[in-house]
Length: 130
Image 1 (cartoon, rainbow, N blue to C red):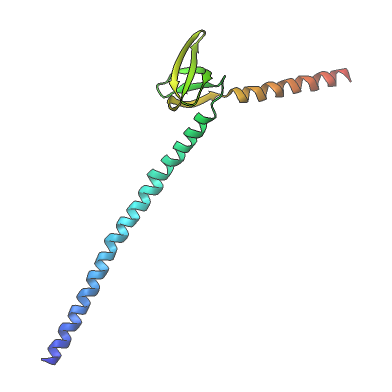
Image 2: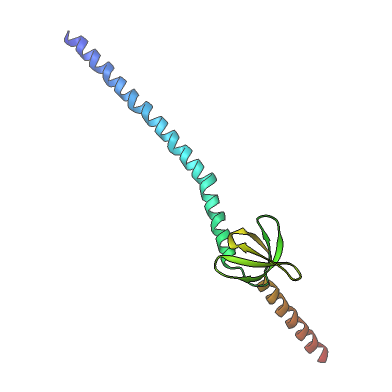
């Protein structure tokens, strides 16, 4: 009977090891699945949302923008929550800042390109005088 007892103890010990190992595999699979969802879905959406919030916070008067509904206009006025767009000469519409999808042409970019063009003409006129 003691020999049978040892055999039973060995069999039970092997069964417990298999149970612990079989529980570990599903937990690892769930953790791996969560990691895939995080890096494929959650993280890129978070980055996109941050970029969108930054763009909407940096809106300036004169920016040409497109709204989420596809309307193009120029920023005529803005405050914390709303933007007044001039969609056609003399036609103004008020939108929430969150409705601005993208900046087509920034007024700041045009200002820097204008000053660059003026600098080029000044340089050319100086060269012509020499």
